[in-house]
Length: 68
Image (cartoon, one colour):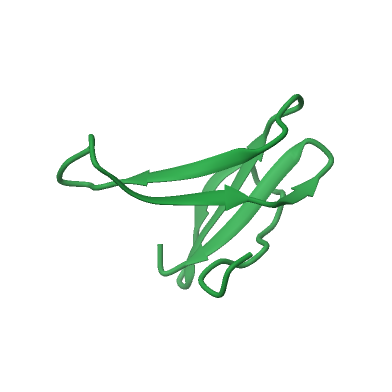
C-alpha cells in the first residue's frame, strides 16, 4: 500500500463509498494480480489512476482509496 491507499475490507464486493473515500473489493479466484483503473468522468477513454491491489483475503482482493 502507498500513503494514499489503505488496505480496505474484503466485503461488501464492488465499490462502496463513505464520507472519507471508497472501498473496492473484487472476487478473482485465479488472479495473480489485479490493477484497479480509474477513468476521467469527462473523458471516459482517459485513465487517470492505476492502483495495484496487494491486499487479499482468500480470493477477494481489496483496497480503500481516501478521497475517491
